Length: 344
Image (tube, rainbow, N blue to C red; front, top):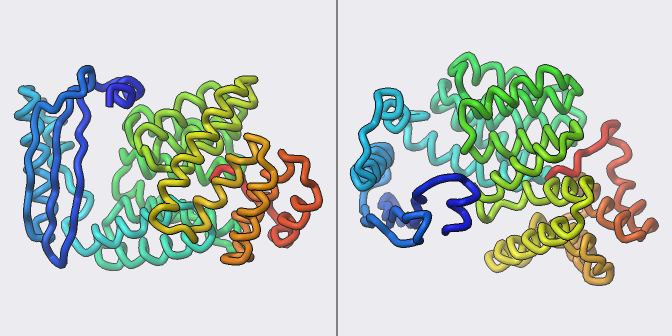
């Protein structure tokens, strides 16, 4: 906890658990002193799911009281702000996020469909529009479609011009189109608005990596990895950024972190190709070719047609000098017309 607090530059950390059974929700939450690791407040909340937004407000107010601080009006407004007033749209959005954060072709398809469902329920749901934007952008690259996601990002910004997530989504889309001046300007603005958002840090770090600004990429990708301790996406470009700056020992350490996170995900589902693919990338950095090839066989038996999986596995094999295997992996992606980013 002290390490996480130090990385994020915060004095306290909130941690806890959420359980859902039918329409009932149980949340255990505690506020932890970042310097000592000792809890300074803890409470359990049992509510109906329809009370989710009131419950979030209640928890936030309890934490403020435990910290013994007075909020200025802007801070109080931020705490009480609701992304949507519809619990059903909110739950669908959370499901969409789960798939979006996995960053595979099939998951992007599911995330886009779910985001559209949330928008149908609440057309003014700005975060759902932002998530749809990035999902559509990736699908456009992977499947050759015409919808770049830019229209969805613009709609999110119409609803909230100061949305850090919407600005970050648009920046990622523009970076993918090669519009670096506008992309990096939006990146910097999104970081000013919310430097503790996982999405903002991950997209900014990815943009800086692709722009060759590796030190800035490292700082932001490390922050994203700390903000979401189970997330795999930041670790792949982070390891490459360390390699690009000659910090090979840190690249190896990052690969080991990726393997640990992948193993935790595989404990929940040992046939999940997304963490399996990340294990291949990690093993490639560690030089373990045989173990990597064994995992490739498993991945291909489960899902042989996902372009992101094939491309990134191919990149791992190039690192290991296994060119025949790499070419075999790249073959299904050659009809796409555009290069597929390894930032997954």
